[in-house]
Image 1: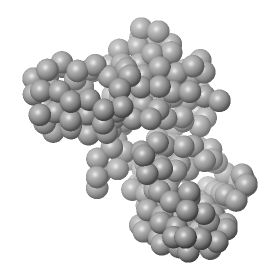
Image 2 (image 1 turned 90 degrees about the vertical axis):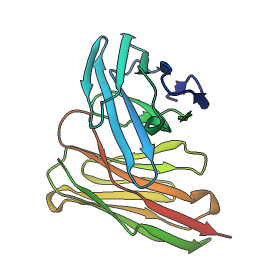
Image 3 (image 1 turned 45 degrees about the vertical axis):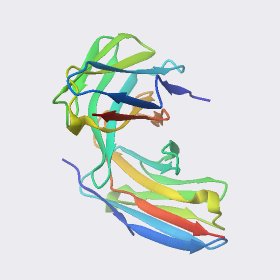
Length: 111
Length: 108
């Protein structure tokens, strides 16, 4: 079975802090994705990566950056967290262009 | 971009009932997936189905790409089927656009 893990289930940070969300997949998938999910807005793509060191902006990249130094790991970085970044963050991976598999999510609260 | 519309937005069933969820999309796609999000927030991939019909136990899905819709059938529903069902589509590569989901509640 594909396994996608995320570093934290719940996270509380202060405004202005730098925040790292980590995602690891164990199936040697090419593609990895970061989404955020908000009530009434559904799932929105922040960034995705189709290979090591490669990345593309999704629909809402502002305020975020990403890093993919190894194939199995994809990090989402909030350079200076703001309260409007309070959300559920979901990581996924896939072998192009097949099924996407999601991690359990990180519920981030920015105070 | 592609528009994805799911119906109904909410559905309440008694255990044992059958249901059909619909996903309409606005453009040609080469990637279509159905997901179930359980009450704890975990998204589970149910089907990768850009065309044709697939079945997995009590669930089955059909995509008619030429008419731009997909259907998810749930038979003999159980309380554990409760949650939100998402349809997601893509026109090129692996990037997906998600619909707003159908909230399903199955009562005992």
